[in-house]
Image 1 (cartoon, one colour):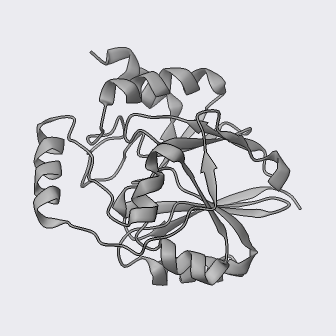
Image 2 (image 1 turned 60 degrees about the horizontal axis):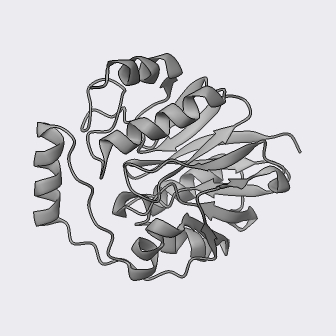
Length: 227
């Protein structure tokens, strides 16, 4: 089976379906996104039970709110880095800090208003700092640990040069007016270091969790100008 991948918006969170010899789903969707997940799968004519593994880029609430529903429909194993494992298994993920004035205001407001109590879900595969290859699934790519937005954040780098980067970058109107670095992160300096680690790995196009994809040159310029 030839490899394909598809963006499936699930609430405000872009999720991704990777189909090779086996099928992997990236992230668990935001509040109210379960119907969108079902529609996305129907439009692709894919049975959710084909999904064998759900890889979470990280454990923040907008990436795991629909996780329980998606796992129930698919029966898939859940994989997340060990540093974010508690967010899924305790069901009370923290909200990240703000990077700039807008991000700090958003973070403060969210901490006052959002107190997610999600189903506690047992993680089936715990990732370490070395990440993992996806070749055993017939998918040409790998998972790379890219901490900074959260300490357990990971990115999926495909051999094609397409990079699914979760919240390592943002490109949605309610976060940023133009694509670039995140406005929310536990450690923005570590985000930049993670970018410096993966940019030489053949990345051509960046697929963020929020907003549409964009060329790698955009983030390269942001990193060069970062102070």
